[in-house]
Length: 506
Image 1 (cartoon, rainbow, N blue to C red):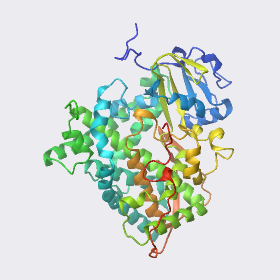
Image 2 (cartoon, one colour):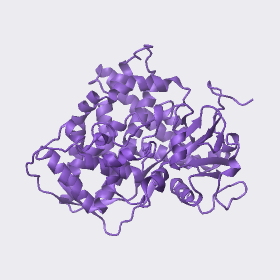
Image 3 (spheres, rainbow, N blue to C red):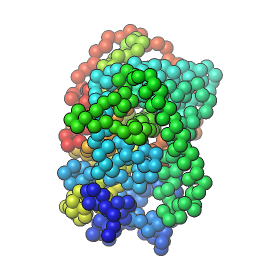
Image 4 (cartoon, rainbow, N blue to C red):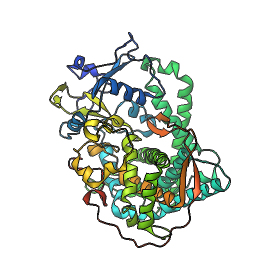
């Protein structure tokens, strides 16, 4: 009898044949190869973009077979809405995420639903993302952004284009490290990426590669990469252990996330996070807390450079709302409603965490069409959900921030925009990321005109998350803005302090 979890579900990977009784009704690519599956014409370095191509050919639900394992993909808005029903479905830790468990363990992102540390950590850390806590992080976000603009000013003076993904990675790593853990990696003082970043990219890339080889052959085919991955994990662990040890010696910080992890007991049970779990949670926040936000900022800057009319409109809003204020206050960031729409539209086209998996809590029928047994799961393909023409129109591929005007948001069905996941396991730090990204875009728009490198075409690199590849921008320094009255018209309930992308049912 197969080993099961405490919830009675089978442990380990479950191929779709085990949970989809009517699997044969779901289309798959036409040229299947015995044993290997649907591998003809695919790019193992870009599995997401391969899946997007299959989605366009096969429709809102399809399946792929890779090395004997069958996967079901969903992106139709009606199917995803039903899959979002928390009473019938829950998060599934899919292969890509499970491949990160050697480094992140039962951290918030990688924990299985039956692991008690997830709820404990969530309840302990949730106050760290309250409005009061966020306001306390704002000054540190400004300080890190000033290091970015100082670096960009030097690149501009030297006549060099800026490395957008590289610099956004430095920015977001320093922001989460300082606000969450009181640590400074010194990223902007380095010519090469910090060793922590190299180790993090290595673990993400290795997790992605594990999906592209047969599981029994992985130890043989990936012997060298596995050794490097072990070294990368050891480096991440040493870095975090040193950070935690320094905090314990100091006797505490300013009530940041690390203080909460070390000193806060659960308000009801009195339970505390173990030392091992603290390590896993810190790694989770350092990796997830900067990798996805850096991608979101990089895509947004790409679209701003490619659409000067959008950049001009966003810049005019920044000048109007912030005036000549040297450092905008916390509440002024939420008033950049058009800048926020630019960010949301960038996340629509390229959600930087581009998929999530959901599993059935009980035997059910998805959207009245597809029977699923308890434990059956499917992968939601977010870039295609965000391009569903039934929701977004025939021009769904076009970049248009006005899709997130408050009235348009209210008119759309719920569960059609999911860049931070869904339900109880949605990203705990989403408001942190949105505030940071909106603030940084406002500061950069106010300071620079952005020009794309001639001939650059968007290429997307994949390492579980997605990022523009090789994106460099030319800068022109703008004059300081003239004083202006800070008056902001009421744009409706969809775009103020609450998350404007979240409608009823999200």
